[in-house]
Image 1 (tube, rainbow, N blue to C red):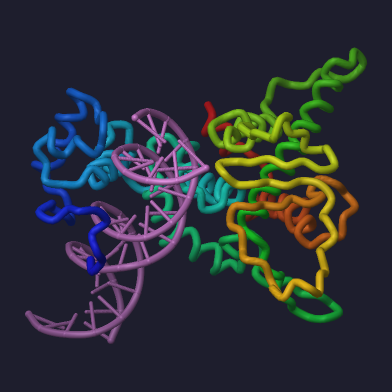
Image 2 (image 1 turned 60 degrees about the horizontal axis):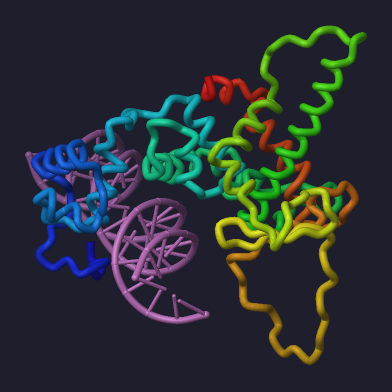
Amino acid sequence: MGRAPCCEKTGLKRGPWTQEEDELLVEYIKKNGHGSWRSLPKLAGLLRCGKSCRLRWTNYLRPDIKRGPFSPEEEKLVIQLHAILGNRWAAIAAQMPGRTDNEIKNLWNTHLRKRLLSIGIDPQTHEPTTISSPLVGPLKRPPASPSTRHMAQWESARLEAEARLSMESSILLAPTTPLLTNKKTNTDYFLRIWHSEVGNSFRNINIKGEKIACSSPASQASVSGMTIEMGPKPEPELSSSNPEPESKPDHKSIHLYAGFTHSSSSNEVEDSSDTALQLFFDFQGQNDMSFLEAHFN
DNA sequence: AATGCCTGCAACCGCCACAGG
DNA sequence: GCCTGTGGCGGTTGCAGGCAT
């Protein structure tokens, strides 16, 4: 495909897999498990690199893969999960048994992205691409960091969910209130995602010494090597002695300044809280989370 | 029928995180 | 703390098949 080989694989086969190769790979893994992918090809008698074998297995040969077109419900779920997780295809795939990250990524790039664009929604931010203002006319929303937006949306949703659940519990416990049904609420599904694999990346937070408290004024945490800072946005250092006009972008730092208060005027905060969350819930007029119920049951 | 264009998707690549020495 | 090996992830590519001209 016109690129340099990823590893030393002169003599190794590339390109589409043949049925014989598939059978060899499946047979070997059925008998021995995949073990070390690096050594698998040699042991299985394949002239492929381990990476290629792993990809073929995880994206195509795994027995639990559900093949065939995505249902409208699945597409909807992908859109909603993308609104929460962004381009973290593996995390999205983890919430969709039988679907691979590659499949979901392809679906997104070939169908869903275009569909959202065609209805005027930015596929990265899940917000309308233009906002018209009576005073200044149509204006383009300034681009926000997708990671920041998605993490903030996720955290906002979790907090809201827990607050609602707490309220519902108190209502339920109150002797004078009408009985609530057992019907699962939207809140439940958010919490269930929160406590699933997806939520892990947010919950497995190591803060230097202490467990994070999202409502605390200033917290710092790291998730998968990223730094998350929460709390009031610090004043920018306007040091004239610093000749560097803009600092080098740090892809591993995410700032959620004051993201969970109600009174901040920060654009980032505004982006990441109510508006985005509402759009997320209201997408295409969908206001219930029944699709999640189907997913979890 | 021939050709060119478009689309879907399997496969590849580079990068990153993590574990072990 | 550094180095190396390995697995995993996301972005990208290019082939194959379908469709339009």
